[in-house]
Image (cartoon, rainbow, N blue to C red; front, side, top):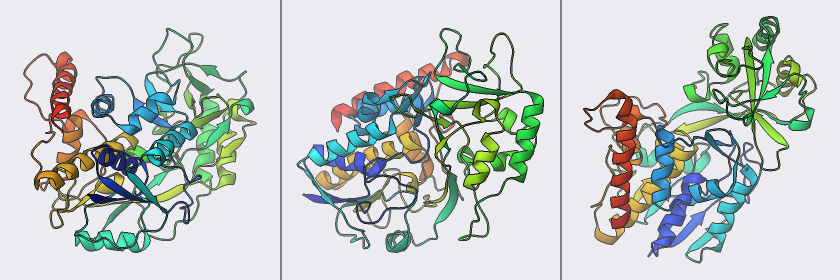
Length: 431
């Protein structure tokens, strides 16, 4: 049977892979070869346009559990991440070029996937389809999704952190350390500031020029991707309790007043991204601000931070807990446009939507499911919860996890994780 997948980002690539391995003939539509949004830099699939971190790899952290659930379900995205990881302390970060190239190669080598390089503009509700167009979706396809929804899109602004050359960092004013990690030098480069240096930095940020935003009057931000200049405008201490927090980054027995952290961005250790400094300042202002940091006084920025609009659905009442349109059961949606937030969450939604579509096509119904006592199921249940009147994009977290646990509080996350992985193993054996 032939099915369609729209978009070859993380969710679309994962969905196409999962459907193809189940024997479906997949037409994968991707327009990057002929029309590319300015936020993208290559034509590869699964391109990471913000951070290169997939966040915590701790099994007892919510996103760490999500990644392990995906591994149990043979996730292409997790396979690519594990094979292209770079040191990042307790987080899973990847060489973004190698990561996307791996996904692209796997998709192109799959004989059940037919890649169609064109802009997809019309959804036929009679043809089994996974829409994974991504949060940058615009134009006629966005209008088509709006037609399927019968409701207006919501939107928010997302931002990308600058990437700098390692050779331009002044290590007379920088040191390696991962937060709270005293066992080895650490994987992050830390650029400390004194109170006086932070005051200069803060004032420079407040006076910095922003890139004008014209397409909406009211800018909406998802808190996890708040531009650092917007954090600064919320108050003097906001950055000190956010991305510039010095706690756990003592050096030679001294805690700095503030710290700018840099995380490795490629495997050959030449590029670093500025952690938590997603921004929409003008390029000149970005240089001016970063050069207030002593270790970055001569920094060379190889990719500036940019701002782009992300679009997502007000999903409750539109899609069900299987990522399936309620009014159009042949059509599923996945990725950030569905209301999940984050790289791993987007890929997981593509994986789960594809498995659910496969079940639906094989038997006319979805018999096997992951409930809210797993992280994959918890996300799907959350974004489809009709009790939510206005959906905000949601990362994986234990707050949406549902399991009746009566044991010691200190053991709660371990109990959640052990239970979830057992459930996913059983599910994997049935689907």
